[in-house]
Length: 151
Image 1 (cartoon, rainbow, N blue to C red):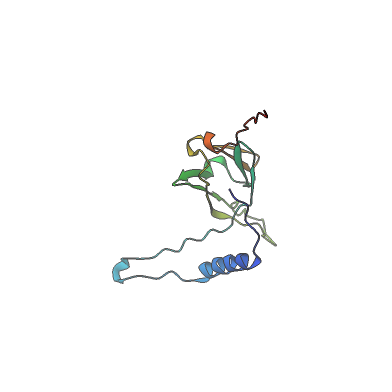
Image 2 (image 1 turned 90 degrees about the vertical axis):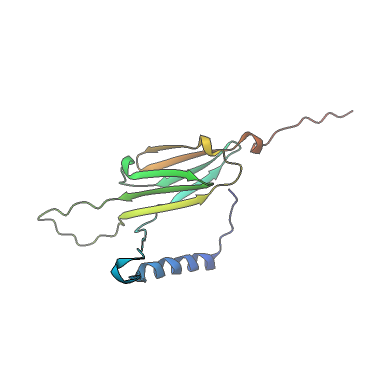
């Protein structure tokens, strides 16, 4: 994975696109419900750290209060996708909320993998609300040291 230079305007554009998707109304399509377009919007997005060593790329995603059963990781056509859902607590009788700031609902994060990743050896571990993904580099991508003999 290449390091990408931070571009504040790109972030503003992405925020604008997300806002527009949230506000936009799905089209009703043709009569009798044919061709209905369904709007799917992620309610929240887990944060990730992406790092690299000589042997692998690593992704660490924060998924607090998400059960292992509610997380799905797939690799298809050089795209790694993390998806799942954080469910909101059932409202208790007699409990009155004054503020709810945490986000709940479905999430999806996708990452394009570099050619150097061996997709068949990708593995995932999940503990304490942190998803660890290990993306090993293929043998051809690993740097090799060549001894130079001086004569």
